[in-house]
Length: 307
Image (spheres, helix red, strand yellow):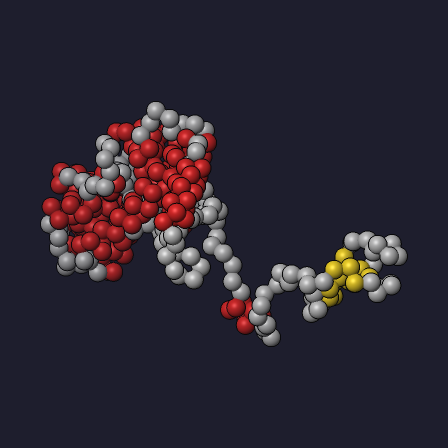
């Protein structure tokens, strides 16, 4: 493949040069002088005869990611202590490589923000595996945490609390049915600190978050209580009617979802006790009873009255 080049021919002063990639030569198109030989071909070593074949053979490096403190762009010196042929290196060389490896690790996190991000991203991996978070949610949480770190708002606050607050906000923005209580089991900080950091992030990033819809929690609670799709659909219908009559205003979404499931399960013949539903929803039995009474008193359906 021939390509134009803007270099200058030293023989005739012509700028019309061509690069012959098949021979690896740079040639003047006027006088025929070979300016350079054995050029390095930066293209692939394979051939493809269709776009589908080219996509299969294409190889690239790992993509950049916000879940690594340096975005995955740095290098790493391996720990195998072997040369290119797989043989063990000499003790003298081993000591030299150990010294290089040590300083390489130090230079990667020589700034306080890098050390902070390195620790936080390791904790993010731990929380993601324990809570089964998706890759997109991890990226979103890491993006939020990085914004706070660059605003220098992590200093003087718990890294873990700020990280959990970032994950929780990411879940809220993506309509993932998670509550702060879901994080307490795996955290070493209390709920008040996490809530304080969460409010700080909302203020600093100027995010207006909407109240979670109780309907988002219905599939999760149904899966935990092993309820059928009919019960799930019925509970969603009850919550839509409750919203129409403004029963949901100012109420916790988990309590409303639990009460709607309690009613729907009775109507569909899959009765669950208030204790079972309160454990799944993470609220008290009194909350389930109060929300249930409000649904009954305001809506007054024949199927509910029979309950």
